[in-house]
Image 1: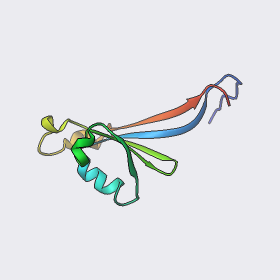
Image 2 (image 1 turned 30 degrees about the horizontal axis):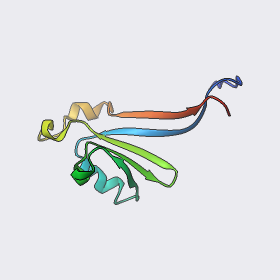
Image 3 (image 1 turned 90 degrees about the vertical axis):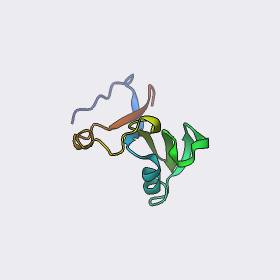
Image 4 (image 1 turned 60 degrees about the horizontal axis):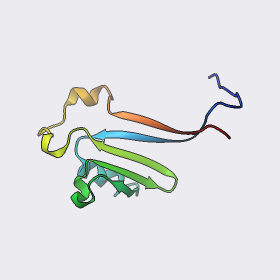
Length: 99
């Protein structure tokens, strides 16, 4: 793999995955309750586990979850073809211009 060592190139210092999930409550039951992530921020705190977006942390590890559809527009079952192609993951690289 080629690397760019130019002095003015940005340096990646972290990555935060954004995963699109069908049911936030089910996803939180896994990510929070199994490995031990904590909710650091959520879009609708009053909704509890039914928020549309949560930002989770576990030590230095970060993870963002966003619902595929807002609750009022959510179908009864997930769209299998959407998940089949793994189209629901985005990775954010945290960069700074100087080392």
